Length: 420
Length: 75
Image 1 (cartoon, rainbow over the protein chains, first blue to last red):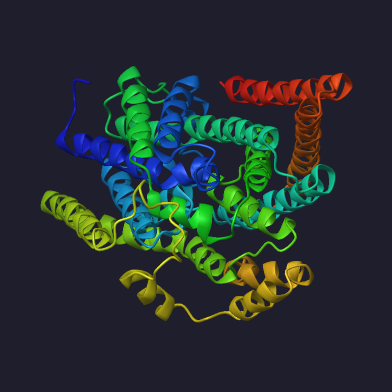
Image 2: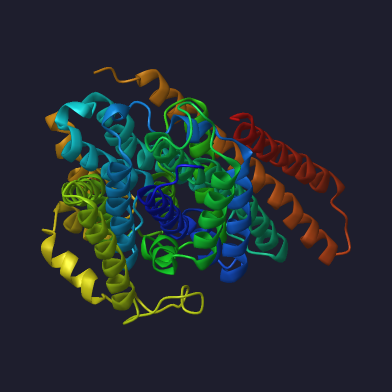
């Protein structure tokens, strides 16, 4: 730690800030269904998730060691590039949190990294085929895999178990939900806390502070674990509300089926070498379980907004990352300007969020989600796709519409995949 | 560009089978407990159903343990 320059310090602090937003952005993945079905009190749920994330952060450094490899050429990486990438990722995370849409934090990070690298070293430094196989394809596959599994599991569960709701049934599904949500939290900690460790380590290597090929230092592991745990505990209540109540209405056994499907898909994918985003998996399984129950309804308008956010994540974060990199290139005052911009923009987003507060007290309130200022603005910008029409059909005939509706929902993600 | 269809396929298959299997097991277990609840209300016992239920839950617990092993073993 001898040569710890100012830019390195800035990068480390920014990386920890990203880790924090990652934690509170992704609390919903593990705990939204548990909270909305009442299996755990909101505060208890986020506390449990935070502890498991922290534990997960210490379990391995494997993900951290592979973070930067493959997607971009390491040669183009300077601390300023990483800083610019993080700025893009943080701002996108905050923006999607503001409108309450779950989107992948990893995609935001990769987008920021790609944008900053392109601005710094040109398009040649990005591996296009890796982009398709590691980012676009999983984004389409994840909700389909988890959704189908959750749908079938829900059908089967209602088929075998009947619809009787006794004390034993209620308690049983409660315990099942807590266990599967715990697994998701743990897996999230091992994956996402380590992404930040990887980023910080990469910055330290790029800045010449530690030797190339080193494992993350202990203080990096500790601070990254704490940042993600703190973020998780603060809780992204807006996203929890969308995930737990906005997409569909969940009964306890649906929450259980969705969370089990999510945990299985996440573990299977990371184990079999085809990594899926936690966010995409959980969103898919929640929708799947909504379709699996007789009379269940998936709100395709919310789902469509979510799909659009997924499709925008990478390019949007890339754009901000590229812009930030272009400014930092102007010199030290450029870097300072970007840092000030990041703080100001974050503060502004937080300020806007106070207009309509969502926290643990009203996260499961029954009132329909009121459209906030930004939500309305986004809805106005996004052309109403075929999904809305299919959505109305889905509400009327939930059974028949299982085939066409998901296809309509995927439409926003399809074009980029088709062009490559 | 090479798409690893085998990886996608296996993730798809494993997720589907394991999820459906686990949820089915768990549901059967819960059904057993619910039967005990009903039986107890009528003064009967439902030993077989309860035993079956605990076997199901044990299998689910084993699956969770294996999941945790997978998370830890990545180290």
